[in-house]
Amino acid sequence: MAPLVSFICGLIFGAGLLISGMTDPQKVLGFLDLFGAWDATLAFVMAGAVTVAATGFAIARRRTTPAFSARFLWPDRNDIDAPLVAGAVLFGIGWGLVGICPGPALVNLAGLSLPIVVFVAAMLAGMIGQNLFGRNLWRRRAAAPRAIETSPLPSRADG
Image (tube, rainbow, N blue to C red; front, side, top):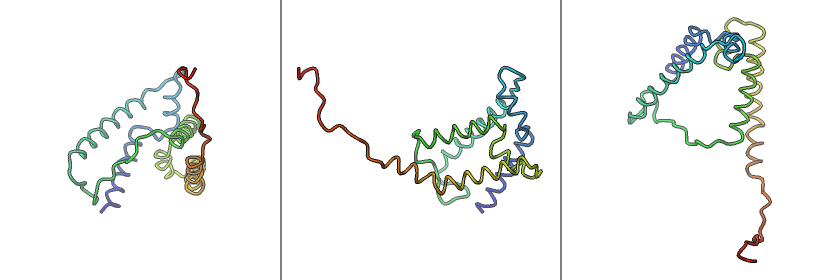
């Protein structure tokens, strides 16, 4: 049942992107062009999306069990770490340069436009690279010993 529900949710998401015009990179770039021909459409789409999501989460939080899963899969972390910030920066740079992010790219893939195909291929390569190399890199950095001063620092009370 879960794959069918996921598929239906994906269809609804894709249809929402198409209807709102968020699959058009120029629309997104227009939103980012604050001092030119600014287009506020994305702000309204985001406000609508946040409203729908907040309502859905509020309803889900009141339930004792999920409708289509054995258990709830709520996030277990809420900290801001280096991989999160690095990913957000890379996402923002790519979104600002091209005007498209993964969801609209997958919807636009149906048109088989060469720039979109290249974008999706690069996106998949980045995901594979992250799975192969990125996780180990961040784990090694987090586990690396740090130089810690072991001798106590003199305080003003010590003279």
